[in-house]
Length: 388
Ligand SMILES: Cc1cc2nc3c(=O)[nH]c(=O)nc-3n(C[C@H](O)[C@H](O)[C@H](O)COP(=O)(O)OP(=O)(O)OC[C@H]3O[C@@H](n4cnc5c(N)ncnc54)[C@H](O)[C@@H]3O)c2cc1C
Image (cartoon, rainbow, N blue to C red; front, side, top):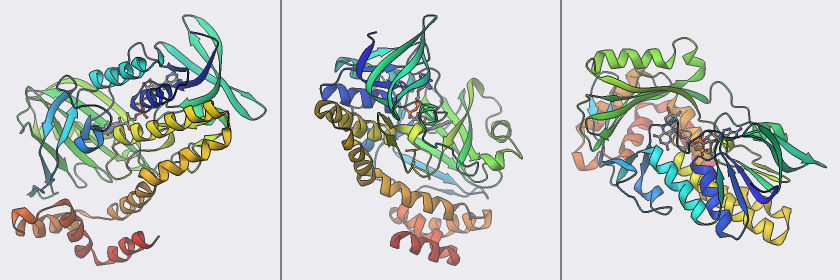
């Protein structure tokens, strides 16, 4: 490592390595610092993405794709199953290999990637972020840079250290638990979603196949609800009831910030991306692709800032994020608040109505329409969405 870089990225997840890749492509000298010993480990993710989101970044490749998804099955609280027409292709990734591949691509473009490098503070000069403090091989180093990109995930501290309020309310922080289990017989091209109080109040439960009779089985509940009953307890009960013969290969718990994207993602010398900037889709909790989109925009703008030596371009990142996903996420956040009001009886009657339609008309759009029709008081909320 040198003492000085144009751009230092904290965190080697998808958002960080994508930011590094595009910053390096723009000609900047970039360093990625990752605290764990290996990029991509440990995995804290259901690993599902869609082809449309993934393909602009890298060619889907069997080496990091565990299963190809062509169907969804949505299970209502009363057990009724709806199979909407998703009209697209999805993947369950092998994120260990995927994250590694993203880091390799960033390095290929000229970024330096260093693991076992734990950032424990930022350096500030006259109100601007001008570097980071890092613990590396038993030493504490000060590395200087023109820009720091905080891509340090859901538990991000880079923003907070720098002076940006990154707090997520308990209601918007989903508390998630997941196992990767073997000896699971589910259709290998289908993602299953379970809804209702029994499975995951204020969230949903998923079964995502990973090939060879394995699957990621997890759920997310609003963190304030999980105080009453922990996400892991919901998951244990589901596993006992549905997959009593499964072997659990890994078990994890983690948070997903299903909040609005931060109002302020930048300050002089700093950009936040990915989970650190709350760029997760607030309805689905998916943050891989949206973090990569945030990373691409941030990295590209960061290289431009360095090239022109013009910090006033920081706003371009926030503007381009709003144009690509930010405004949509703002709407999704409002939809999430509407969906939160659904009771089991609403979900059951939506499923009944949908299953009466011809299969070709059972789309996700039709499902949402039914949700609105079945819950007349929601019409107003949803109408408001489109005029705000
Ligand atoms: C249970 C669960 C299931 C999920 N399922 C899905 C899904 O199916 N599909 C989907 O799209 N999203 C899913 N998500 C969300 C997704 O995992 C995240 O949105 C995504 O990983 C965000 O990428 P990121 O690069 O912002 O952060 P991360 O992937 O969290 O990467 C941040 C990196 O920063 C490093 N770091 C942190 N602090 C420091 C420090 N001080 N110094 C150096 N390095 C540091 C961390 O070690 C980590 O490697 C799920 C999340 C959970 C918890």
